[in-house]
Length: 458
Image (cartoon, rainbow, N blue to C red):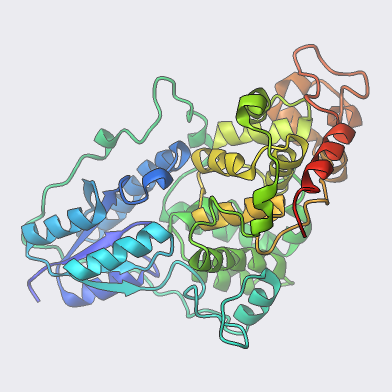
């Protein structure tokens, strides 16, 4: 075929184990395109941290494509309209893409399919969401039985190598210039610390996986220790599709020992997509309608507390360390994500949706399904969730998981506080004047949260 085909990239920015790319190469000249589309997701457009990461990931993808004789075309606007315009410019009638499950992408795929011949492929998850079914044929809402059912289909197919070359069209269409999109922060450059933490792109994803694999058997314990680097830090690479979950599964499952706990984290991504497939508005609607009666504090009353939480100035060192790490790096340690989320919801009695939106804007791995599912799990409002009345005590969690060095790293006011006093310097009489007092006591917060939860009918 001499007529080119369009390859529509979204959260699948890789060449290896990329089913849409491999299918497009089989058909003829390929025009890879990425569309910066803030119209289709509307209020769910990418947050600032994700945009920073996208810039560098697109740079890396374009470099990889050029090594194969191709390049990345950049356009901005509504995806349906842009793809239709590109088809008219180039004569293409077919579009290849990996299937996405966010509600806005499902709608966009339907519209593209009405205008052009859209060939959708799978590859962003271990199994296509919706394919693992209960005994009665329905979709799972609870994680544990979902894990058991999905594990019966594992391992996934072996990852496929990138094509040796990508045929180019006779003429390339016009492309935007990446820097003109202004995805990087400036005035002020709040993301200046991100570059020390992340190297977006397929090559770094592969390196991180290789480095982490031998440590995967220790993940069950190490993931809870903020002062150690026990997590894989692959979540941003997986979110932007710089590595396939199948590649991660095959590498980790072959290590000596039992890496099941980490494999379950990969399955959690699939589970979250299955949840939003059933409940597309899960990012804003309680999974359990009973929680609609929860008397959350209005931000007109609680605005100062919410601001203190976002800035890491609550007087609870483990909470403040996590929130400052998030602002500085666009990422937060696994255990600390739960602690900070629980603190906002239960200590401050602020609606989980405000926290979910903050994480959406500040996480480099902000994923609609996972973010909503995690927040609703902590809040107790989800279809599969922790009980609200199980209120996490940050002052207990901090020494339990040996977070002292983590706190000293991210809360410089406490860097000189020695021993266990760093977990609660106010109680130990060691609070430096530059570090704030607790904005609320643990017992007071717990009693207020339980009283509020009494309005939620079982």
